[in-house]
Image 1: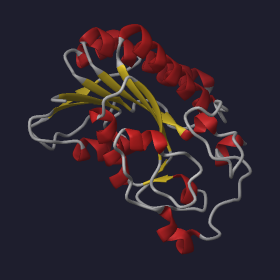
Image 2 (image 1 turned 135 degrees about the horizontal axis):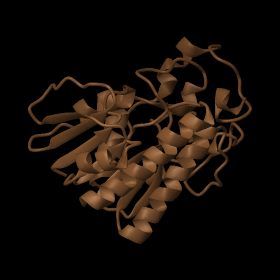
Image 3 (image 1 turned 180 degrees about the vertical axis):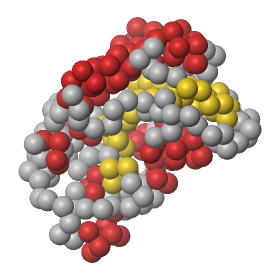
Image 4 (image 1 turned 45 degrees about the horizontal axis):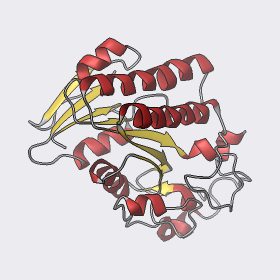
Length: 250
């Protein structure tokens, strides 16, 4: 994939991916509301609001793949969730289709199934149980991805991302952690593997993981990090939750 766009490229995940997904001959089109300072001659940074369909379509014209990270990454007022995560995501899918993109990797969230009880193993076929309006908005994005795969032939991966952090910070992270290294490996696999539509949990190789990693393995994702290494450091940090969504369930 020689031309790859990343929406929300100035954010926590985007900042890691723009460096991890660089490769010789690949042009990265970095989109965000925040100005981005270029770090490599293969980068092209643009200020784009994904709530604006025409501006998004112009920015995505001719790209082969899109990593869609832009949006509100936590619970918020419905009006803000609606505009950023639902209208914005719809615009990105439509802009990608218009521009001839082949593949979209959509940053979904584990909060799509956050009302599942702690201790239950969850996979892509587990019924959706959102724990928040944020989770609902990401469930919408997954359904939209299914539509664009079936109706328009786009290749779509929906990544239900766990706790993306440099290292675990609390007990819940022992089950949900996604390390920076593994995140880069996961997104790279999702961009390269043959597929039509997939839902994959974005999680490291955690001993206490709640989520099935089979879909990721099928795509060639083999996580290297295990949160258990930090178990003694985070023992007693954070609350014990009844549901996998943690604080979002409240």
